[in-house]
Length: 504
Image (cartoon, rainbow, N blue to C red; front, side, top):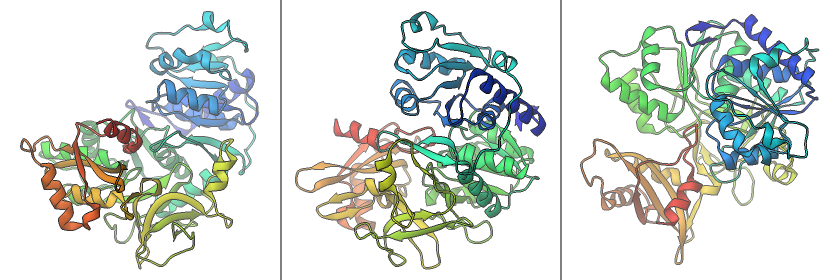
């Protein structure tokens, strides 16, 4: 890795991961105990992640933006014994320590920032004395780890779903799942040890960790790791010409386009730009190709499966689609009611199957049973269709389907039309309760900063949709907002938006 201008060799990473594993075993970590990672991108994150595996533990990934409600749910649901964090996030965690009965210790990475002392209050808890360690001290007190190669079927990590539609569930991914997906991704994208990935995605997410980090380690490549995405810094790095791959979410590509408009130089071509975690609009795809001279490769994945489908590395990267299944994996479309496979060009639910599909939801057998059919196909909850030549297109989430007056409306179809208006920056379509139609179609719109006052008007947007879609699909209400609620990976949190608009 490269981080803050410093190189980190595989040998150095392996040594620190081993020291951490030994310290975990000395501390008393038992096989399959859960250890949470609640800290920003850094080499220490990667060393801790690998060290937990070497000690036989299960990793629990925690979104760095989570606060009281999310932390309480996730850490208690997984019954986390130990959490690795940093001073800013520990300050947040310390506010609810007494509400986390399974948490026995916190390891704090980094010397900067205030130390939060909580032992005085914790003595009132009926649990082992809570311990607080600094990272270096924790590593110094450990013994040499007794490494055991984990079983492929053992749970490696618990990744909590992004919660865009409600309370998140813990998806159990095995070591075999992670290995199968790393092989599939690196094979499909021609990843080699000569590649240098500019990695600005958060490591707590499947995109940054399960694709970026796993792929780098699998191939022996290099990751230029950053704490976060900064458009100007990324653009400067691309100009240097040493990067061969960049993975991002759609909002990152729109910001790079804004950055490009400010510059008089364009980066040299790199081997691969990849987009995922949220839909990439056809307009952004076209604008990026025009500005950068390259076509983005869009893929499709989720917490429960890591990567499912990809546009081809060699061949047509078709805008608006997520391509075809990765090597060694399967996908199909089934009817929403009968659950039987249906012919091409018809909408239904996307199902996937293969060695990459997770083991089940943590301590939630009912949700696990509902997620699979009798033949082992996983119900993704995503609605879409397959073209006659095999490209998959996602039209939305099955739970986001709007039924208005007996007609089905898929939000993404309407959103794509709204985004063609030159003064629309972002659009989110959803259904709100309606006494006559059951649900009415509504749209939340973010105007472009350079838009003229009052443009677009609600009438403009309704007319645009009426011109290009069946009349029942047009929004019956238009709301103009400053921004859309998103999670850390850029997905619009429609359950929060629905709550906000429902009060309007």
